[in-house]
Every structure is written in structure tokens, then in C-alpha cells.
Image (cartoon, rainbow, N blue to C red; front, side, top):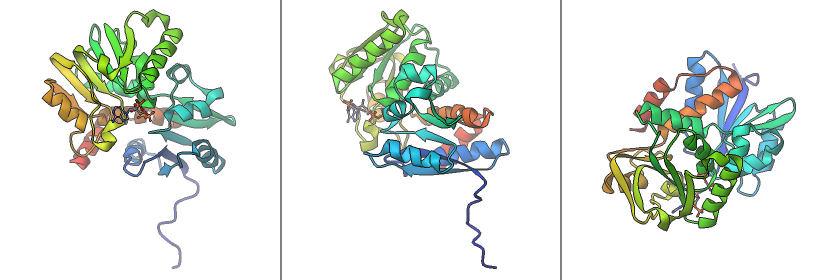
Length: 287
Ligand code: ATR
């Protein structure tokens, strides 16, 4: 016969992760595993958008019949702009979007990073109430988790960033949106990280270049956790730094990745998949 067995079924619903770079993204594996788990068939691609044409690439994807997009580095803030008229409350406050879809002809945007992070921390037995948290980074990844972290009842959340203006702007935006957290939220440069922290979270993209942010005077309290939102086949530069700096526990962001994907999957497909087996399969694959 002449038909090509690899021709994708055009009737399948089409999804993708959009970023730059995106070649190593595990999102296609995760979403296909969720689909298998819930008895669905779907297409999930990697979409590398040119740095100067994110909005155009998104528009084309949906015009072409695409159903949903996960947004990754460095486009989460641009995704927020692009979906300006269709933001969920959480995404609006965050200033960053990681999940896009079309509804009634309108582009919708949501941010599931915070739920993904909190679920992962909970899975690891972390109770954030009363804790002192240092969040490193003020880009799209950091923005998505600030309010969810504050909502845990942590004692203090200090946001530090290489470009200090971005950290203080984030602080101002958050305290405007949620004034009740004014006392527990602070911001500064990497040189303002001084102190003993129960959790230090790396939300920068520095691990892509295998570098750790140059934190000054940051120490881990007893039993503290070093958490890198990034993941790789081996411990990231931040994880190695945290271990050396005395963190009792270090981990990467693989659990957060699967957790945020599960909530995106639920938004698009109406079913919340089980994170644990997919995380275990992915972990085995990375080793
Ligand atoms: P993301 O979606 O991962 O947040 P982003 O919006 O491009 O991507 O933001 C990148 C973040 O990583 C920023 O906080 C950036 O700091 P600047 O605002 O000063 O640029 C941070 N970052 C990237 N490389 C870094 C490095 N080597 N050291 C410290 N911070 C770094």
C-alpha cells in the first residue's frame, strides 16, 4: 500500500509547548502519559517561537486549529500580554501565563505554576506555614508562584533578583493586588539575600547555562530545603550550590513541572490526571 503509517490523524486535538529553547522540553511526554492514563488520544508538539514573534506564532497555532499551549521560558510574561482580555484572576495578579487556550473565539490565559509548586512541596512533606522563604528571580517563572507562596501562611517571602528593579516592581504589583501580604513580602538585589532561610527557591533560568545565581550571605536554616524550579538529567548548578551551602534537602523542579501540566491538562480536557506515576516514569527516564 502507499499510505504513510506516520501520517498524524488530522482529527486529533492538537496541543504544544511553546518556548525558546524548547527542544528538550518533557511536556510532550507528560501530556501523552496523561492522555494514556485517561484514555484520550491527542497530538502534543514542541513549538519554538522566534524571540521577536511570540504573539504571531500563538495566533497561527490557534488559527490552525490548535486547542491549547503551555508557555515556557522566556515567554510567560508575553503570554500574559497576549491573553490580556481573557486572564484568570490568578494569572492577572501573577503577570505571567503558562497555559493558553481558545474559548468562544477568545484567547484565555491561566497560570498553573503556583499549584504545581505547592503540590510538589506538599508531596515532599513541606509545610510552609511560618517558614522564611527566599525566592530567587523575578521573571515569568517567579511571578507565577509569589501569591500562591504567600497564601500558604509563610512568615516571610523575600524576592531577590539580579536586576533589582524587577524584584521591587514585582513586590509593588503584588502588594497592590493583595495588600494583606505587605508585611510578609520584601524584595531586593542578590546582595540582599543575607540571612537564614527555611527554603531557598531558584526561579531564575540560570541553570540553563549551568550557573547558580550569585547570592550574597544566604544560608540555610536547620532542616532547610533548596528547590530549583529547573530540572536536568543531573543535579543543577543551584542544587550543587545548595548542597554545599548546607541545605538538608535539595530537589529539582520535575515534580512542579508534572504538577503544573496536570492542572493545564484539566483546564483543556476536563479531567485531572494522577501526577505520581507520570513523575516516577519521567524520573526513571532522566536517570
Ligand atoms: P523565566 O520564565 O524562567 O522566569 P525570564 O522571564 O526570562 O524567564 O526570567 C529569567 C530570570 O532569570 C530573571 O529573573 C533573570 O534575572 P534578570 O531579571 O536580572 O535578567 C534570571 N537570571 C537568568 N540568568 C541568571 C544568572 N546567571 N544569574 C542570576 N539570575 C539570572
